[in-house]
Length: 273
Length: 273
Image (tube, rainbow over all chains, first blue to last red; front, side):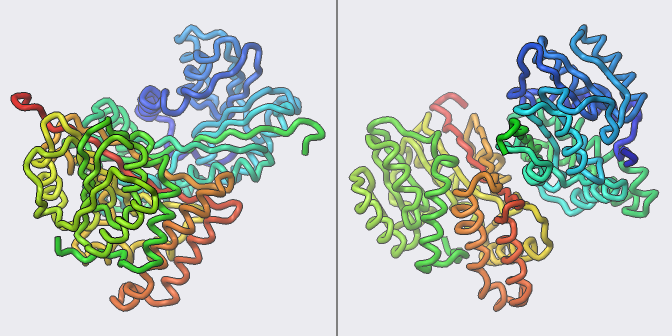
């Protein structure tokens, strides 16, 4: 997995990921729970933002969480320890070269990972081989093309497009959420079902204004300011106007929309296909 | 209400509206029911596509459904009669000049109407005056900016943009769905709550591929072919390429997304504000 991680590894980025997970926990994870003794592989755990939610919600399942960044794994380990969770084993490993036997997991969980990979189907197919027959694969991804808002703003769309272009240049795809269904199908899983999770923010939902529009989405766009300008994708006034327009959507008459896609597929039992 | 109705009044368009209502009934209307004896005003009933659903779901409420087009009212009357519904009175009237006394309705329902009006807040404020204190106003609108799909296609977005531009030229706004919250608030209603209704279509949902992607959304874009070309917004090959790209999203690996916005506000009781 040689793709550069477009969001970077700065402390502020880690804070953003925490805010994101904290705000979106119910929306993204409320319907994910694993049974006692189930062996679950979390592929691409990053700093553990989803890991602590997953492991706390399925306290009798056993999680193996891996990430390609040793530093992220160390942070995730701290986080899991701070949360008092004892059902998570953290490993530093590459999704394309995992040290596990075929069919050794009951379930696989992949969240905000495919967007960074040049070969997402191959990644899922590789993970599917680690899945026992009858096991499930869960995939969650966002889609920046699902962002629209009031007041509408060409400057805001231009700033968002910088993030999309930087992620593409790094081999990823910030518009991958809409592709979760065909990706899981192409990886060979069955009974695939995708349910989008739309984040809708207006003035009646102040917790999402702060937790999502400001601290998750707009913070992410602000986070690409320097690389976007350095890459010549936009100038500083242009990026700043876009960020101001995104903040404008948090006023009393503003609205912000974004959608995550969550898909689940099943590995066929032997002889079933 | 002098705005031209961008979708036209052709038989094929009426068929499209029926398909749309048939497919989307659960998504849009499952949570709307009015109590026995409630007086409900449906403002802008068109050919009655929503009327029959509303009236059948609240058989003991009394509906008054009005539209600015006498021809549409006649068709709606036939439709209500064919459905055997006896709790609907149809009237030919303009939203801005309705022949009803202030506070004479318990509830107001407005669906796919504001998108065609140059003064949507004034329309809602006018309707709010007809509402008794404590009554509810329900507003449903689509938003063409919420349409995205896989495979993505600049040609498809260009074709959709023709519809957006034609509707704007006629004084309407095809991107109004995202504004439902601020519009209801600006009209003076309280306790406004908007819940988006996302239509998500992939190969596992064949009824939506046919009923929504093909017969509702793509048919609507095909329907603006001649006026869009006549207005010089696009050439024939451009429009046709866009329509082909929309049909492409109905293949096995395709995905189509669109969102409707449904908002409900309450008129304050006397002395409450």
